[in-house]
Length: 302
Image (cartoon, rainbow, N blue to C red; front, side, top):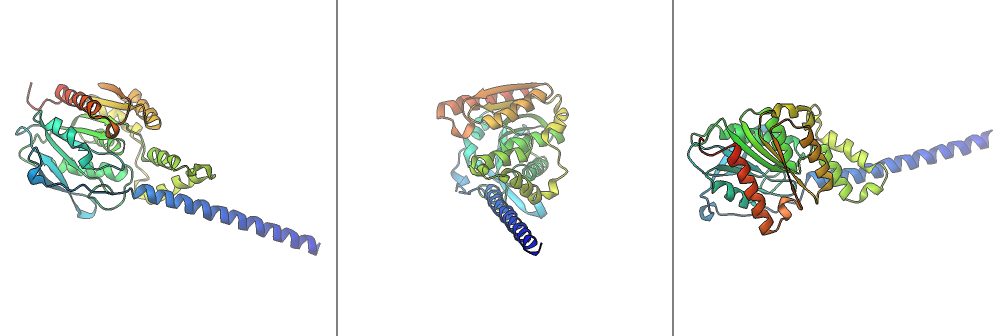
């Protein structure tokens, strides 16, 4: 019995060691993945506003803990609505300047800024949780200006920026029309897409462990409902969903959100996402976006 018990003890110790090694390994791999995802590469574009077309000026608004975030305000017609343009994950405000120009050319005020962990903004991204609060703060501060319509804002966003746009539109009555491109219903959806794209989901439980770690990192947002929960709040707000065929995972999410969204709503399908479009495709896309806002949020009273 003594020899048998010793063998069983060794076997149990070996199994425990293997399990512990597996847990530590999976946790390390998942932790590294989440760290990489919430710290996307930043390559801030440098611009001299003094020589930029559109005569933009800097405009700051508060974010977490009283820290101020700087954005660019492109003036349109005095008292016209402001359209806030929201870049996507692994992008920055400089990547959407041609859309800004198209909107400003039609007399809209336009505002854009870098979300946390992107472009000129330090910190980490939460794939939408924190970013929605930043967008809400930007709108609240912009509404205090005396050269804009304080009650009517338009929003445009893509993937992460689209999530921020949708959740803001669900809660802010000043949002009068919005466009969401490749939108998802929950930041966890975007996390899972990024983890799968890493190729490391071949390791068992990496996806589940990454999910848990991301939830822990964003514990303060644990009670935030998915965008699906409050879609009804956008009833009566004109909305355009853009779905990119080259983003099948996001396309499924965006299509489901469109199907469940209340009227009025429209859907537009494109071959590729905005940042990968050719010059001609981008021009056609931007014309469609401008036409949508001109129809539902004209810069002058009709």
